[in-house]
Length: 137
Image 1 (tube, rainbow, N blue to C red):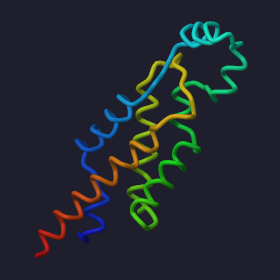
Image 2 (cartoon, rainbow, N blue to C red; image 1 turned 60 degrees about the vertical axis):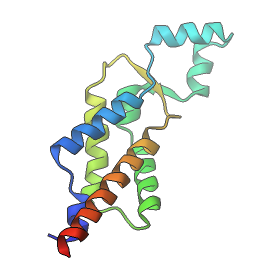
Image 3 (cartoon, helix red, strand yellow; image 1 turned 135 degrees about the vertical axis):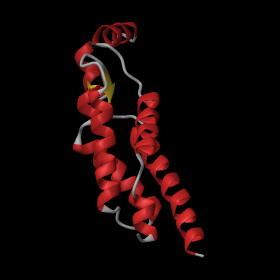
Image 4 (tube, rainbow, N blue to C red; image 1 turned 180 degrees about the vertical axis):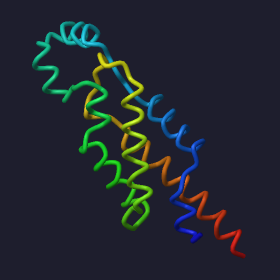
């Protein structure tokens, strides 16, 4: 097993940690909560939905847009193209996180999920890369 393969493979425990991190970082609202906030701001619900790019949370998390943004951030930090395993991991974590949400929750596309997930994956990669290099010595 190469150092890069070891660094890009995640365990089920690490995957669960990633999903928990995504779940804890979400800022979601029900439609009624969002409507009340919009009314308090003197804004129509339609205008607020458009301005904040609001959609169902499961849709935002499962979107190509969020997956691609996360991938782009990860590759920029790694300074290389993401491996097949890293690409799959991003998609799986986002998809699995989306499936665990109530279907009525809303969230904005303007969120920090991509940043947090890319940071967490980089930290895992660095930790495993160091461990793999130490094991090779």
